[in-house]
Structures are given as structure tokens and as C-alpha cells.
Length: 459
Image (cartoon, rainbow, N blue to C red; front, side, top):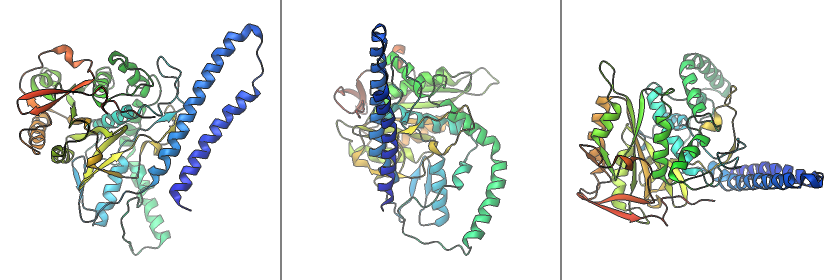
């Protein structure tokens, strides 16, 4: 039997079991007295909403569950670039290193069964929260760079990483299966001891993204912060609005992250004076680390191919923490590329909520299946993220990023750096449905995106 089909059937059956429980509940509910008529109506509305939530979750689990298990084809002849690193897949050691690094990325997907979101009865973000989940993944990558040692990989993925890429090769290391298992066990026992401090930080980061109202970067908090942009639970969020929500979330987390700030570019311009004002502190203190988020629109309804070279060069930089983007009606988190295909994490698989107050399992927050899609299918609306740990890193970022965005065509930069500060302080707050993009090196233009993919529409 095809394993991907089996997975879809399993996920679908699990979701169907959940739905059957609700049907049994409805059919066995005793009739209330006349004095409780209003209470019964409210209960029926709540039950109907819960049933609809489960129906949407079941549909997305079946729709995306089987595709999650499919393998993307990777070539051994071309390197894979992922967030500033390159991997030669023709080398077995490089293949394993790439798998470990990919499986160490934090993966946030649709969840179901959490407490109702602010101002609604929704207990799942399935069907509408994909951009927020992609935003969480970008922010999480920045936090890994901010808090974890350079080159960190998740120790737990040593147990689960296997050949999940469609590469034709055979490996004979000279060990029997029992010898190989014994060697792996010894390695893991020592590794688990050495990795304890970083694994504590790993779990702490994941708790910040938990699906509960107290988590600073959880879905409840992001929805609450989206209200000032005219958004509510169940709405679709565009990448530009998501960038401002992330900025507000970081600003509100000064207790947990006192040395980190976030900046959102305005009109495709990074104003250096504004960034320095955010980061500078009185001596002898050092600069604060900074997340720089740049909302851009790389074309009209379709991606302008002239930007592809620049996108590739940005993903080759170590300061790049990914791209909140996707394809039309479908948000994805882009982390790299091979040849003319983007490498991504997909948030559309709906999973049960995890209780992070206990010693929770980590597997559902990591994906070991690298996926690819053609650049030609990339939606032009996206937000690009960068991270600089200190002042020297920021100056280096400005140089390397400026070279990358000027690579495609000098008259069409993706965005620019400008000395000085933005003219309108208030413009750093709520973005509109009009996204500014650069038409010429010195000329700004606007494109009406009210009917475009700037706000990803997804059931």
C-alpha cells in the first residue's frame, strides 16, 4: 500500500472519529426545559461552531496530511542553500548534515483544541491562520540565532532523521544493524548530557509560541495584536500586516527578551537612523540585537522573474532568517532553494494542541520532510526577515543585503537602505491594503492589492 495514502486514511479516520463524538453528543442530548430555552440556543450555536471547527480541521488534515509525507526530488549535482549555509548532496555526510539542520528548524502548523481565541469561539486556526504560523516560524528562527549557540542542531532529531529526500543511493557503512544501533545509543547517551542546557532553551522558546493566551508569541497573542490592524480571529492576514504584528509582539516581550528589538521597513526602505535609535544603548552596554522585517511586493499578480536572483542571494546570507510568503492562496515559510526551486516549511497540517506546561514531546514542532516548489509559483507578496546580533553584524548586514537586492537589475531593487528616519512616525503602525514597491531606483509607486494575494485567502 502507498504509505502516503495510508497516512491520509489514518488522519482522515482520526478526524472522523472526533466528528463522530460530536454527532453522538448531539443525538443523546436530553431536551431542556422551557425555562432554559435561551441557554439551549446558545449551547447549540457553540456546539455548531465547534463542529465546524473540527470539520475544517479534518478537511485540512486529509488535504495536507498525505502531501506532507510525499518526497520532493533533490538533485545530487546541485548544492542546496538554506539560511546562509550550502550543502553538497552528492556527499553522504553533507546529506546527513542538511537533514539534521532542516529537522532542527522550528515548525508551527495549524492546531486544534486550544482555548477560544480572543473575541470568538474558535478553538482552531485551521483554514485561516497559515500566515500567522509562517510568521511564527520566521520569528522562531530569529530567536534560535539570538539565544542558541552557533551551529546548534536539535539532538532529538538524531533518532528520527532518515532518508526523506528522493535521492537514489545505497549506503554500506560496514556495520551490522545491531552494531549500528549500539553505536547510536552510546552517542545519544553522551549527546543528551552535553545538550541539556541548550535543550532547556529550546523548550523555553517553544513555550513562548504555545497555543494559550499567556504565551507571548502564541496564536492568541498574535490575534489580539492584530486587532489594531482591523483583524480578528478567522480573518486572513497578509505578510505585511503579519510583520507589524511580530514587531508589536517583540516590543511587548521586553521581560523575556530585554536585548532584542524589531524593526519593520517602510515603503520598501530601511531607515538606518531609525534602526540605530532602536538598538543604541548608553555605554558601556552593547547594542541590542535586532530583527529587521521587510514587507515587499515582487510584481503585480505574479512574481517578476527579475527578482529571483535577488531572492536567491538573500537566502544565501547567514543574516537572513527566512521569508513569510507562499504561493497564491497558500502561505509557506521559505528557508532556502536548490536551482529554480524554493525550499519551504508548510503550516497547513492540522495537529492537536500540545500542553507545554508539562514535559511535552517535541516531535510535532519539527518537520523532517524537506519540500520544494518552483520559483515561478511564488506569490509576489512577502515579508523578508533578517537578524543582527550587534552593531558590527548590523553594518555587515547592510553591506551584504544591499549587494544582494541590487543583483537582479540595478533599476529594480527589491528595497533600499536610506540614511535618516521615516518622515511619518505614525506610518510604522498599521499598514493598509496598498503595498508600496519600487518601480525605479528613485521612484516609488503603489499597486492596489485589495483583490490580490497580499492577504492569502485559504479555506
